[in-house]
Image 1 (cartoon, rainbow, N blue to C red):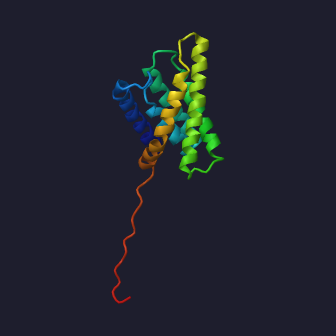
Image 2: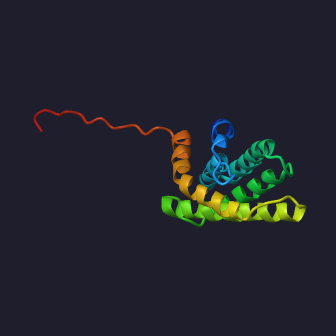
Image 3: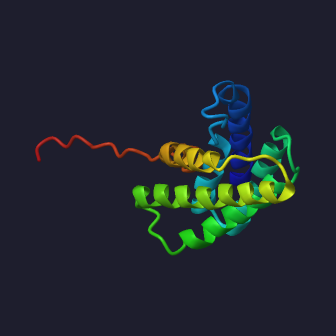
Length: 166
């Protein structure tokens, strides 16, 4: 059930990213909302959820991108599984550490994508690596909050009983 919720949330975020956020590019880059949410969820989920989410979000991004079909799927899968593996050694309660970790993972992913595109002969700008990493750094806190709201059950508040005479 949790995988279905994660995939549905990813599909909704993909629609928001491709329909709304693509209208407002920042230095010819769309805000990576789907990648950041997938990275946040792969940190807190298990290995198979990270793998499935990496393949699914990579496929959705590949549908939207015009070059090298399958490269985003491969890079997202590797990034999400590596993030899951490394996050096992980190404190997941510390949000600042997780935000910095997500920015570092995004930097390595976008650098690898830049190098692959350069090797394939597709024109790419290295400034976009820094811009996309900065975008992930800025929105990763919100994607951790969105992930926790989507997956964690609501907490019950305990009612205090009124006890007269005490």
